[in-house]
Amino acid sequence: MKKIQMVDLKSQYDKIATTVNASIQEVLDTNTYINGPQVHTFQKNLEAYLDVKHVIPCANGTDALQIAMMGLDLKPGDEVITADFTFAATVEVIALLQLTPVLVDVDLVNMNISIDAIKKAITPKTKAIVPVHLFGRAANMEAIMKIANEHNLYVIEDNAQAIGANCKFSDGTKKKAGTIGHVASTSFFPSKNLGCYGDGGAIFTNDDALAHKLRGIVNHGMYVRYHHDVVGVNSRLDSIQAAVLNAKLPLLDEYGAARQNAARKYSKAFEGHKNIVAPTICDICDCHVFHQYTLRIIDADRDALMQHLLDNDIPCAIYYPIPLHSQKAYLDARYKEEDFPITNQLVKEVISLPMHTELDDEQIQYITNTVLGFFK
Image 1: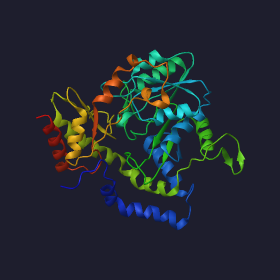
Image 2: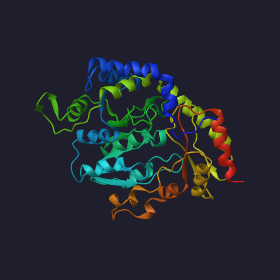
Image 3: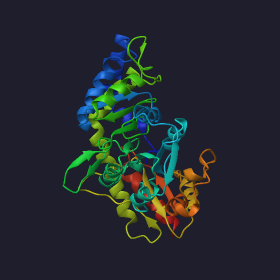
Image 4: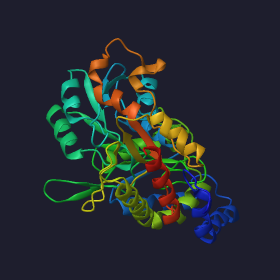
């Protein structure tokens, strides 16, 4: 059996090496390393894939989220509601911009931001909601947009983990995650479903005026060289990373299908087990593209299971072991433990298994047998 990787980028690269290498060589031949043709081609290709009017490439996913907020002219002290159970970058940029983060609990089933918790957290100072499409599963954007419209709030989608996922609405329509709110961000970190070979990110919007402002912000506030019209940053997707993404974007749906197929096999093996809650898989709307395959372990020792897997050469991870409201950087007297029952439960239960496009049946069987063997 091939060695099991948490993310097997080498095997993925081997299958597309000729295309990737040719795309990179084009950059090397033209010496256009910043804002070269590959960047503009990728921008247009991703706009077409997502069916969104504007894609603004940038240096990484954290920058993308920060720049999206900068473009909305939020003011210091404005409250921004987001999920407590996610990676720190989501709240980090809120704090960096001197906005007031308002962390709320998540839903037990989908692990995304709780709709009821959003409603309870809104105050006259609330200006925006940042739903995170966690682990590859689209958040309930229909409900979130309804709340935002009722209260005149911005919606900034953190789509770092769910590019390619679909959001299905009650009228039967579908839209890609990241194209529904006022603006969205994504990451092209190598392990993402659409990953480059370094850092990279992008911002999405259908708002022409906002897109224009964002394009200036990512480039030192310039639209014309040495004319600085807005306060900006230096955050550009380099041409070599764009070349990699151009080679991989046509395969994104194929990659998503491979992840979903692996997830089905995992979940089938764990079906009905009294100590394992597997993620649900929807075959109707493709709302989950499985950036991570995350189990909940109930009435059993999650940490002992993790060690058991590692002892059997199976990589695994806990995303995330500490809630944001308990992190030293984000402690706040406003937060009460009773406000976060689900998050506090999840951090004790979750464990993520290997998930990538190259998982084969032999590996999946070994992983699932090893997990099940722990409980015997």
